[in-house]
Amino acid sequence: MTRMPVAERRRALVDAAVRVIAREGVAGATTRAVVAEAGMKLASLHYAFGSREELLEAVIADVTEQERVAAEDGLLPLDPDDPAPTMAQVVHAGLDRFLDLLVEDPLRERALLELTLYALRTPGQEAALAAQYAIYHRSATATLETAARVARSRWVVPLPDAARLLVTLTDGLTTTWLADRDTAAARATVAFAAQALAALAVPLSPTGLADATPDDPAPGGPSPDGPAPDDAAPGPAPASEHEEHRAC
Image (tube, rainbow, N blue to C red; front, top):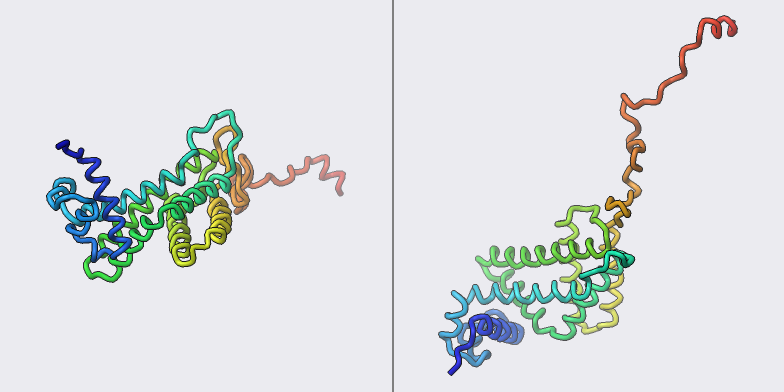
């Protein structure tokens, strides 16, 4: 009998865990339930994962990575001679692909939601919840870095702040769609969300510098707070003795 490679075994167990968690909750996702779902023996799970907690962490990392790949699919590579899309177009396309993945396979997002709720109501799971959202934020940061390269733009707010907004938007988009399954309304939300997020970026000039924003001084121009004392405009030159005499 051919032995299944460890990578395939892990893949099958993660997929089985997603189905069990989405169907029965985290409490129902015992090691025995997961291996039964995968059609494996209990020893197979312990061969692929050190513990049930490691398996649950793998579920979070796997689903989140699939979301990131879906959001970035088709964005790179971009021919440098092609005109860059706007940041709103890039973000819109990425969120649309995120929604496509959600509609295609809602069980994966239901499993993540179950893991969140389980951690919220279970004492001692604070670190697990923090780790789950740290994965989300790292994925969002990577996606926004890719978006900036594709749109030839830069973020005018700290990247972690923009990433937090993206996580907040996708969280809301996911839970709302899971509740009402209104895909058309979700598409409209994606358009609004893309505009809001894109407003936090500005395009780069052909020199590779960001175009000035309303709050940025023009290159070589005065500071918004006015000229520094040493830069004050010179006053009129003192009148010559002859000019003083003429003024008398």
